[in-house]
Image (cartoon, rainbow, N blue to C red; front, side, top):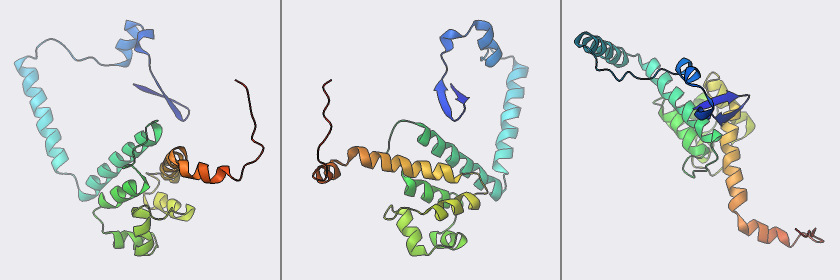
Length: 182
């Protein structure tokens, strides 16, 4: 389980909690078999829940998909793992597709040319601050500009850590390096 502490997450050590604290914080499933009445009530509950789910409006369905994307994006930027497929272009593409929109239509909604939008989608061009802020405004704040920037930052961190060619190239510009005895 994760506890929110400022803007960081830390894992909870359940061993440090007493049984009473655990009982107050969590609901543990019963190990006793359900009665016939309880089984019927549970099945009725799930039937009603499936019915409500099936009867969502198109707008509710889009909202649910975007909320799911937001959580996926936040989980990724909060993790220490880099996954090449989860780049800015991936999340931008998912954002557009989950709204059932064409790229050209979405580009018009945020006032960029389809060609520039395509370059952002395919990671051929880094998005501007204005573009990322437009994404936040378009989502009505659901996905913040900061979250979009953190995805970009994660891509840049990986590039810096793995690009040995630039280190070799730039090393010729560095003279009088510091030397330390460890």
